[in-house]
Amino acid sequence: MSSERVPVELCKGVNGLEKVILRDVRGSSAEVYLYGGHVTSWKNDHGEELLFVSSKAIFKPPKAIRGGIPICFPQFSNLGSLEQHGFARNKFWSIDTDPPPLSTSSSSKVHIDLILRPSDEDMKIWLNSYEFRLRIALGPGGDLTLTSRVRNTNTDGRPFRFTFAYHTYFSVSDISEVRVEGLETHDYLDNLQNRERFTEQGDAITFESEVDKIYLSTPTKIAILDHEKKRTFVIRKDGLPDAVVWNPWDKKAKAMADFVDDDYKHMLCVEAAAIEKPITLKPGEEWRGIQELSAVPSSYCSGQLDPQRVLQGS
Image (cartoon, rainbow, N blue to C red; front, side):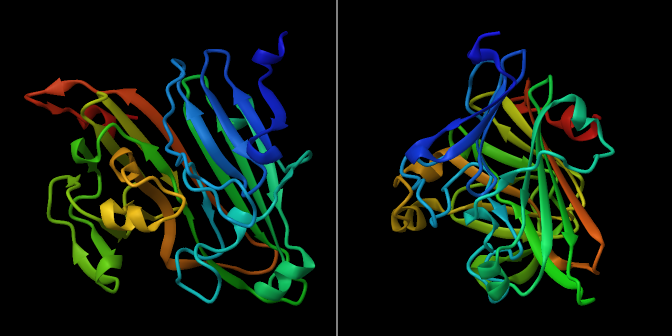
């Protein structure tokens, strides 16, 4: 077998950082940097990139990588005393060569298991001992599944609390042509209005200005419809009741050093998350949060994409 077709390959990425490439026999692929346990690429069997990574992303620790799927742990945003989005996304993870079994079908897929444990320095920042196991699996249909398992390994009997998000940046053709379905009628906290609580009124979420909202108690399935590409992303989630929708729009985009001014037009973050009610773990307890991503062709129906079979299907 040529090295081109090795299902799991460890190699060097940008700036010599180690990364893992997952390949499915049908042609889909994913790339994961050990720095941050960070998925930076997800391609379908036609080789089309489905995730957005800024061309100005800084692959240089301790800076987090702009785009892909950053892991927000143990804190989402600034909701606590830690740095923005916690520290997991700018730590070096290890390959987990002997992970405990997962009672899912992902073991039959091409996958890699990573693990993050705190260093002595980390323990000064967040006074808890934990094991964070992350499995990234690529299915035969090109679907990408991330399974996070967080265990409290404190030996002094203390529980700990955390918030969490898969900060997924999807690649879209044109943000003004995109709609998100599955979150209508749900309450959200508007980060642009001091996290005031509102109820979503539209029959779908569309974009014409900056959006930064935390939707609460959301369904297990959310769809992102890209009219121009006739593609629908489907997010299925488990253990992650909330969902963040974010696009910085033009002013914020220009203010970010690792972002091209017009990048906001070609990305959308829809993030499976646990934010409103932090996860509490007693010593020995484990939490699991799963995000499965798939991209399916969409058909036009009376001038609009018809997502019904996506949201109501399996």
